[in-house]
Each structure stands twice: as structure tokens, then as C-alpha cells.
Amino acid sequence: MSGPGPAPGLGPALGAAPALAATPSPGADPLPAPAPGPGSPERTALLRILKLSEEVGEVAEAVIGAYGHNPRKGASHTWDDVRAELCDVIITAMIALRTLTPDAPAVFATHLTHVHTRSR
Image (cartoon, rainbow, N blue to C red):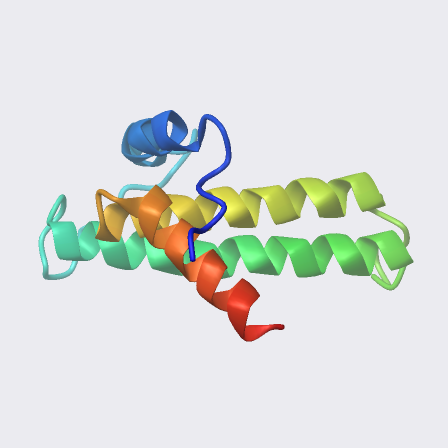
């Protein structure tokens, strides 16, 4: 059974993902890196996978804010914010996947087909 294939333009976007992810955030505090050393493939993969947890936390924060359940901030987010944060999770996950395999679009398409087949 043939899968749906990656979304149009996904391959080129994933090719550029490592450069995008390597750009430090403004004001980032450079700390000494524990072993494995800075720039090692293992450390890069680990940090990109951990970044996913951070992004998921931002989704949770946005949902809490959209419902107005933050006691200090009240209704601090909109559902558009939630949607944007979910997109950030997807982008971050794809960057992490691309870090682990150069064939990320095919790996994702294969897995998506498997999940679709399993859910029937």
C-alpha cells in the first residue's frame, strides 16, 4: 500500500531545518557544554529532542491562557495562539526527526501510513 507522501514543499523545508535550528535565540546565555562536546551529533540530536518538550509546554501555556485559567494573567492567549504553538511543535519535531535521519520525509510518510492503517 502506497502512503500519502510528504506535504508539498516539505522536503526542501526539512533540508533547511538544521540551519534554522542552529541559529541561536537572541539573548541566549552561552553555557559550557557537558560531554558530548558542543557541535557533536549526539548533543545536537539530544537538544533538538528536548526542545520538543519546551514547545509542548508552550502549547499547554497557550491553552491555559485561552481558557483564562492563569490566576496571574487571566485570558492571556487566543485559540490562534494555540494553533500557532501546535505548528511550532510540528516544526520542532520535524527538525528533530531530520537530525536523526536525512530521509525524514520518507520516514514520516511511512509512519503516517502505518498509523492510518492501524486506525482502521
